[in-house]
Structure formats: structure tokens, C-alpha cells
Image (cartoon, rainbow over all chains, first blue to last red):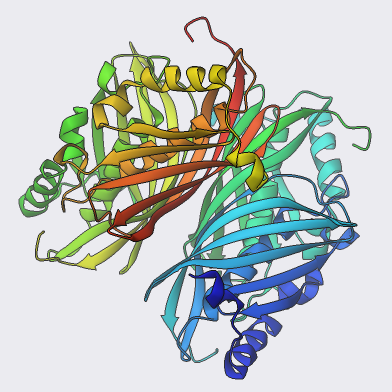
Length: 152
Length: 152
Length: 152
Length: 152
């Protein structure tokens, strides 16, 4: 995955397919997450800090951080999949590095290797306070490309 | 961790401490999750299937599955921590094995090794349809025990 | 994977196929590892403690512990694969829980879920000192089943 | 971890401490691995392809790839630790992306976050054939900083 490739635009068809699938994820809507960037092999998802996504100390819950990271990686992979396919997370691993300060966090999913069956993504989650961007979580994810399902 | 030990009761103080912390997790309440079992080194959390926790195919989102697994492991560790301490997830890894059928899923966090600083938990998530219980996710988690914070 | 199934015997053909592949792993021979148990969905590999597999404090190196755990899981999966297939590790995660005491360690790979394409294994590594068996590492592994290669 | 910082030189004392510890790792010597680069928060380890580190198809065994990745991350962390401390791997996760072609592989361990107790590293392993460098494995590792042991 060349940096150059990542900065290219996705086609309107891919964009519609990715956004449409995201919009069907009830969890993302329920958490208040939005997809803020779609490029070939890279997707950003933003989550505002709110009581509804907090853990016991008021920071964003690791589960919410992981959920948007998982979706960001899944859709990053999905941008590179054939038209009649679907994406499933096989597994992921995430390290929580720092509590989320600021008023929102942003997850960045980036394809590291795209294969016919399996895709591997890097997951990064950042918080931003003023000019300072902090890496608060970093992960790695394996996804599988499946032929389309009737309900997709 | 002996099976026998796991079946012991937690003290009323530990139970109140764990339940109190769980009740402050805005995310768990927002998702509709409930803590259904608290034993020394083992905690269960149940999540009903609903549109609010779904992915694009209508199954429970991997992010919601992971969120309750993370909390189940965290509180399993917390049952064994000293009174004036707090628990943070260092990292976890989870494999999604099967889609969630049935009307709810149950996450089971079990302490595999409890150290002074670090605790390692096994994470399992089950679905139940009729009599059939299926392992739908399995994971492994590292947690750190910190001295109490003023806001805890 | 039922406990009962795990205690069944593998066929002589499967045993020969698994042992033959293990014997072609130059690394296992070079480390001094031996396959000590082959059952359907479960394989044990034993590694004697020696200077050749040590880290800087004289204990067995995490890399050697991981190597036999990876092979144990890979061959556990392989026992359930079709005849003309090969196994590759997609990824694994391992927690090192305790230093290896005693004169050898034993890795146990157990299939948790066996699919047509992907298999997920539990990895456990034990040390034994007298009667005391200690879990020194625990992991989780994803493997892929591929059609046979000419060089297999 | 700033790129700039990574390109700085380690002090002769740190270099001697890291090289000395590496030289006590019997496994690295037994595999034929060499430490080829030491910078603050970054260490490279090279492993020549040989029958002694192969899997059943003649490629370098995932266990050998992981072993040098684990050591590279461990020593990357160690370059930033206080003088009287030791480093232990808590856990790591690695994805194997491609078989190792060429005559050697190189593992690069890079500190992503360095804390007083825990350090998180990125692990990358590359193969090189002619001018073409390929990422063959990518991982993530958690390490703990302990006070010195008598045998260190």
C-alpha cells in the first residue's frame, strides 16, 4: 500500500457502497459516530465524547474506542473489495495507550496488506486537544472478504 | 485460578464496589448491557440484541461484542484487586467466531493470572438459541492495577 | 470442539501426515522440540530447557516458547484438514505469564473452531517442576487452510 | 516518538548494555540472528535464511520470524529504560503477511509509547529480494520495565 495510492479518491460507487453499509450499522449511529474520510484503503471515523460512551472515570470507554477502530478498519478494507462482496472482522488486537482527552476521538483504519481472501489493517485512534494530537490506541486487524449475502 | 475458587462468593463490599463502578459506565447502560454474575475472578455481562447494537447485516456489531467482553474481563480482574485501586485495560485481542443468533449474548471474563501489577483474563462470548450455547467470540486481555484516583 | 472428540485417536494416515510435516520443520529440530501427542484437534510439543533456547536471564526465550506454541496450534488445526491441503499461520497473540522453571516446557494447541477456510486455536504453554504444573504462556491463533502446494 | 528522536544516536553506555544483553540470548546466537541497528527507541535484528530456521515448506518458520521481532521490540524498549532495569515481554501479537523470500529477513522494533511501567512497540519484519523490500510480518508488543535482577 503506497502512500500515494491512499491519497487517491474512491469512485462514487465505492463511496456510496461504503457509506450505505456504514449507515446500516445501528451501533455507529447509536454511539454518535460519523465517517469523516473515505479513501482507497483508508477510512476515518469520529466519535464525540459523551456520557453515553463513557467508562467509570468519565473517559471514552475502551469498548467504544475499539468499536470505531474496528469499523474504520473494516471499511478501509471494504473500499478495496469487489462490488459483490461483504466484509467480516476475523479478529483484532488493540492497545489502549492513553485516556481520551478533548471533545472527540478519531479512528483511522489503514490497509497494510490486501489479499483475495484476507486483509490486514492498522488501527489508530487519536484524541485532539487544541493543536496537540495524541495517539490513544493502536491496533491490528484481520478481515475476510466474503461473497455477497442476500441481505447486503 | 481453581474452578473451586471461581465458584466462591465475593464479599458484599467487593460486590458493591464492582456493581457501583459498572453502573458508572455510561456506555454499558447506553448499550443495554447488564452484569449478571459476579464471582471472584469471574464476571458475566449480558447484552440483548437490538437495532442499537447492530452491524450492517443486523447481527450484533463486533464492537458491541468486544465492549461487553472488555468490561467482563475488567471487572473479573477488579474483583481480585485491593480496595483502593482502579483497573485499566492495557490491551486485548478478540476473535469473532460466529454471528450472534438468538435474542442476547453473554460475555464471560475469567482471570487466568492475577499479579500485583498485571492481570491476564480470558474473554468468551456466547449466544444461546434454545438449548444450544455457541461460542461466538474468544479473546485475551491484559489489565493493570493502579492506585485509586480522586475521581473514582 | 467436544472434549470427547479431542480424546479420540487420529487415523494412521493423519498421524503420518502431521509427523511428516513436523519432521520437515528445520526450526523445531534445531531447537530440540519434539511432538509428544497428536489427537484430533489437539497437539502437544515439548521443548527441553537449554542454553540454545535461552534469553538473557537464562530462562527459555519468549521466541522459543512462541515457536512451539505456534507449531502446536498449526498441527492441531492440520489434524482436521483435508488430505490435500496445507496450513499457514495467519496471526497469533501470546501472553507470557511466568518464567519457565523446570527442565522443559510443553505447548498444547487446541482447536476452538474449525471452519472450511479459517481455524482458531487456543495456545497454552506449561512448565512442570515436580508435581506442580504452571501455565507460563497463553495465546490465541488464526490459521488458514490452503490447497496443497507442489512442494508439500 | 518523533522520527527525529529515532535517528539520534544512543550513548555508548546504552549501546553496550543493549548489545551485552543481546549477546547473552542463547536463542538469538543459536538461530544465527544479529543486531544490526541500535537507535533510541528503535532496534533492527537480521536473520539469514537457513535450514535451521525453516518450516515445512522451506520458508523461515513463523516462530523464528516472531522470535527476532520479539527481541527487536524488547531491545527497542530497553534503549529507553533506566540503567538499573530489565525488560520483559508481557505479550505480543503478530500477523504473518507473506512468506520470506530472499536470503535473509530483518525485524524492526519501534517504540510507539514509552511509559514508566509499560512500553508498547510496533514490530515489522521485512524480506529483501534485489531492490524490492516486502513487509512479511507486522505486530504489536507490550513490555514491562522491572527493577534490576541480581543475575542481570
